[in-house]
Structures are given as structure tokens and as C-alpha cells.
Length: 199
Image (cartoon, rainbow, N blue to C red; front, side):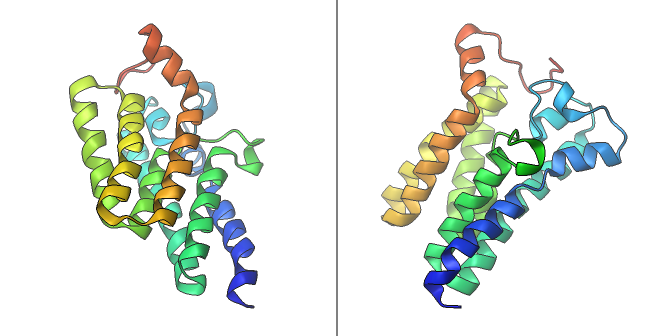
């Protein structure tokens, strides 16, 4: 298979990896209530935290990040940067819109970090530092993700001047903002739950 022919395969591999609902799998194995029936209904780590199981939330964060990392690393080694970028996009879309869950998935923050980690670790560090700084001062997980995702592409363009890489994370940031549209409304109305709250 030529490199050009591998590009759509890379996207599909990324989508399939990204669509693995680790939050749902782990909470079911642990015997908690259906993750989609509490909090935001999301399958991500923040909603897992609302079950009161911090270990499960940490595991969800780790595995969701690693599926993004795995997608881009596998594609990068087989097909190069273009394949890795498509695999990263596929993984992100798979997490947000998993076919197994009627296209209702998570918000994409951990996968965003994982894709960064696989492609450009310095970007992952910047994202995490921005997230932590915002979370520490506001205790809003959603706002922290939005701030970090907004700044990260700007950092990538300023520091690395790599158009393809920056374009991918601009697209992921727009998708992340879309996934957080209800959170944005709650932030504007002052009704958004803070980190650690079970609402």
C-alpha cells in the first residue's frame, strides 16, 4: 500500500481508536451507575469524577489521552506526518461521535492532549499548564479546557510555524468548542458546575 492510499486508512484507524469509550467501560466494570445518566452525560474523565471515584477518573483521563497518542504515533511511523494528522483528526472525531454510542461521546479534552503528546510534546505541556492554571484559579474544568485549547494553536504557530500542525489543532479547537457549547451557555449564565461538584 502506497503512502497516499494509507491516508484514509489512517483516518479510520484513528476513528476506531478514538471511539473506544474508556470512561463508560471502566465505570461499568467498577459497577457504578450509567455514566450517561449523571452530570453532563459525557463519557469523559470530568463526568467520571462525578461518580466520586477519583481513581476511575484518572484512569479514564489516561486511557483517553493514550488512544489519541497511539493513533498519531502508529500513523506517523507508517505513513508520515500527513497520515498522523488525519489519524489525530479521526481519533478526535471518534471520541466526540462514537458510532457505538449513537454518536454521543465525550468532550475531547484528554484526546486533544494525547494527540499533542504524540505529535509535539511541548504543546501538550503548554496545554496542561494552561489547564491547571485556569482550573486552580476558577475551578471550572470546562473553562480551563476552552482557555487551553484556544491558546495552544497560537503557541504552535508562534513557536513552530508549522502550518499543517497548526491547522489540525485549530480544527480540533473548533470541535472542542462545539462539544462544550452547553458548558459555554452555563458559564455565561453562572450555572456551570465546578470541579468536584456532583451536579
